[in-house]
Amino acid sequence: MKNAAELFKALFYPKTCAVCGCIIDEEEELCDYCHETIVRCDPIKRCPRCGTDKRNCQCKKRVFRFDGCIAPFVNTGAARRAMHLFKFRRRLSAENFFARQMALCVRNEYRDISFGGVCFVPMPLKKQLARGYNQSRLLAEKIAEILKLPLCGALYCRRSGKPQHTLSEKERFENVKGLYYAKFPVRGKTLLLVDDIKTTGATLDECAGQLLAAGADSVYCVTALISDRKLKSNNTGKTGGTMLQ
Image (cartoon, rainbow, N blue to C red; front, side, top):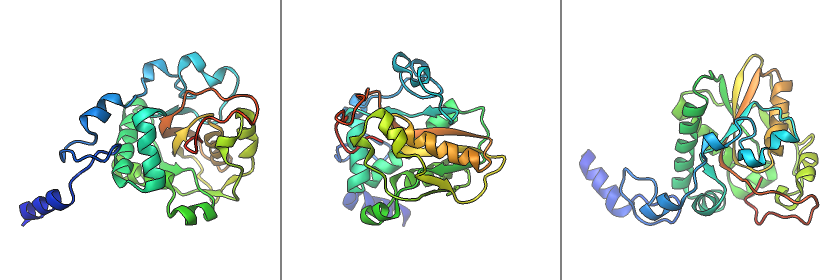
């Protein structure tokens, strides 16, 4: 019966590439083309604190409240397209793909850290109702399952701020001030904070600050994508799309 069910699934619901949607083998996650073109983050070339390429390290001009940020992919090309499909077209194969890759990064790059729970960046209620889901929560749930850690929904979003992708770097940090708060104490915990994309780190920094204020010992971040784009210093310096956070 099991073989028959698997055959039925393969015939009528074949596995598809998380990026382009073409049919692939069950043991694969991406087609050959997307696998070759997706740009992975090289941890050796990245600052372990801010996650940015060391040539553009943000720590030179800003002290972040989180203790580290990692990601499996650079926010460009195939990975960027896959995230867009996940966020706005609910391609669940992309969700599973990103979560597995993010969990693998945590196991490899945070292997000496004992986490007490997995948190996620919350979304304004109105926006979540309109979209139908919070992509960061979906990723966090899957990562928590893979890593066998408890999910900790400690953070809440008070209201909708201005869209981050329309703002300069300085404005992004101002925009998120007071936007989030911790609903309950997380005393003594080392937490893994999950989001979809890190550009300036403004959202992650504000969320990490609220978790620390609620008693967390430390906060480490993992995102699916990290952007290395430099933002202009004024609000005309858009970075090209609704993908950036």
